[in-house]
Length: 320
Image 1 (tube, one colour):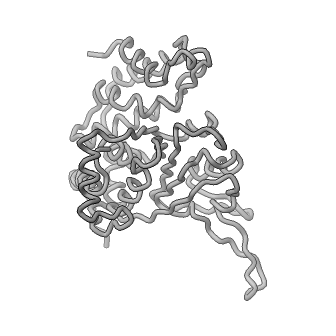
Image 2: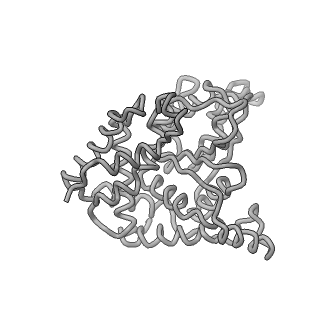
């Protein structure tokens, strides 16, 4: 019989998870926390950063410290939907076709350089991300639980890429940017490598949390109290993005629910049973930046989604 995990045990394990991942990934605490919040909310994450900032290492370390199954798919221009979801294969022994599961049947799917594959294959992820299932051969096959997609993309290369459409971007709970580490963190990275650290060998990491801890944490997050004033504040922030002159397409109601979910998860992970406006401010950028479509003239003037959100957060009245 499986032991029941308490709320406090779940929180302690997930806080320890951050420290365990820190043994392999240096200077990206915000990205580590964002992935844990996404797991608590059962949401997906878009990781953006130049090559070599440990995006893939972060996901592998997370799966190792959580003892979850993980699959990495390198998205390329010739990747077909069936290569991702699975396809029918002829079995000569039984003289019949059988379904062979694709790499999407895992707990943690790393979709590496998702913007390098055509829209047809990108869209194959939509059903898996939204419904947690794959439809093929006239049958619907559920995906394992938990299941989240962590997709990476390079923000500086545009040749041979296929930008994600707004409808698919909206399926990601958070968009996390991973900058080049600060000087002291980069020195720490090189010192570790000089001491023999091998990023391909994560055997030093130990599983410190499990799916049971995630399930208990998710239940606690859903039970968290959110005052009507904070709910109204979230709505006002999202509505303000639609009224910005630099924005062609503002945050949808789905974006507002994503910001609410992420704020609740952050409040719970911080040890509180209520959400504050500061929680909303802390999660507004990762939860909303990919849901804004700027006007072309604003982009030419150097306006960014984060800049618009900074202005919105500064203008919308904070509840007392």
